[in-house]
Image (cartoon, rainbow, N blue to C red):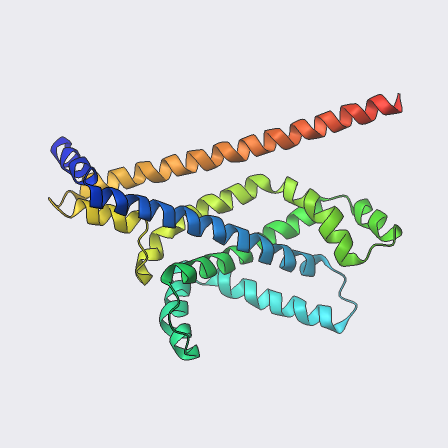
Length: 243
């Protein structure tokens, strides 16, 4: 095993393989980040639709569409969504010249949106209803009240869960190879091929994913600490003014 590890790192130190590894690492991180951003946007919209009053027909229709959307993307595996989007939908629509990476970003974003929508719905419901009532009392419309008052508070409440969603997206990028995207998985396999040192390559890949997860976890904790510190500072200042 030790000999396999030596051979793997010797391969990795080669200029071409080093570039290949960093390309795979960059694609993995880029697709996960962009997918999460798209997911937060989609999830926020769906989350607002889910908690909005259903007095009007248009809102009830949007609610039904959102329900179907969430059911489709939560009910099918990511790899199936990638294959259908890249090998079925694009040819059927006659779309040509779309890079596989862009398809990966779109699919990851839409998949994440389905999960974030439920996370966001829970976050919105965790905010004191008085916040919504206060916004409406000030003359703000329902969408404005949600986007400017409720959603920012909801996002703060769900940051740890969003961190978990980001970690899930990072690990799910291992399926990107099905549409010929060079990710960490593909890069490591190609690096391990000379000498057939796949066992060392898989061990190295696991370590890389663990490091990425630890970095994300650390960033989430720092964000929580910063927000909590801001809340304590604001609360102290507010108390001082009252006294």
